[in-house]
Length: 425
Image (cartoon, rainbow, N blue to C red; front, side, top):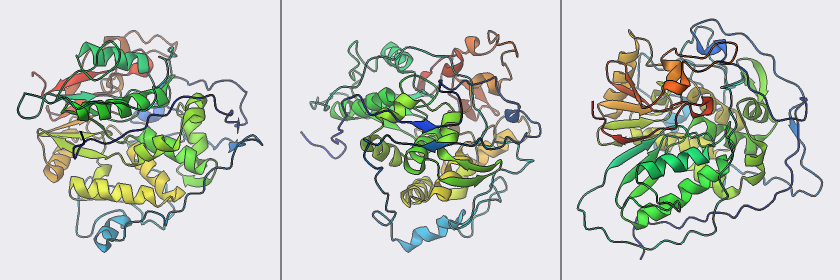
């Protein structure tokens, strides 16, 4: 039975792919990620020079990468043009970034005194390896199951997964959202992922395949499983589309390929990445309002650069991404890597209120910034992280109770959070 919300999702079978050779200029081992860098703290940022030699070299037998023609799917509505200049006309927010550039401008890195974010050409969080969980299935087969319960079901949110498929399956099953075979078992429940499915962990493509399949199964059962776009989705899209095409960043010339590897990109994910994954990620929304909760990926006010309403934000970001321009895509990625806008006790609550006043809701729910670092509970330089990530057992409510952080720090031996809203507090 077809309904307006039931869509067919083709989940690809994992087949051995030709190796994705990348000449990085680094030893031919998996990337090693260091301690949590100082640029996340409120201190001047050190400039890291771009690493030479980042250039994808496909094997001779591999087919050429498809050429992306930005004219294939442009939006022609002139009402959207005002948002392509970085900010909608006549819109002003005291926390919005003044460095928003028009689409034709060369994007610049964050200002030296911008303590909200970081330059995405630096290394990111350390990685603790885990074992992957199986592979994806074949074409999704779903059957419509009518529900007797009137109205929408309970609402759940999932924090950053970052390729940790085993942990995701465990937490979804613990909440009764999937059964022992990994199939949707929550009827008309509603499930939102807050973005960042890949990088750092062992099986990002497996995570995407699972979410795509659950989306079809949940729709057939009268519920839904949906997802937001995170900065790592933008990073993976950019690495696939643009490779070693240079862009200008705050640390000099950079490339998506180099930034992807530096920030936890897994070569097995790139080998298994298919067009269906890119298309799915490219269509994800950036913001949504659910039961008075404003769901976002990043704890930043950069969303205000893209519109006065949630619809404007999502439409504008989709339109910019569909242009297939490396500089525009890099600027999107750069802005959504910014973080910690709500952390300061004095300015944080006002930043949250600005988002809520613009887009609605009474609380912001976000991922992106790991709770241990929002709390300042980080491991020592000798690698002892027992004080921080191990202690995370639930969301972090802060900024005068207006913000809920959902990234439990699974990449740092923390916890992957799957939580029902509203919280009991």
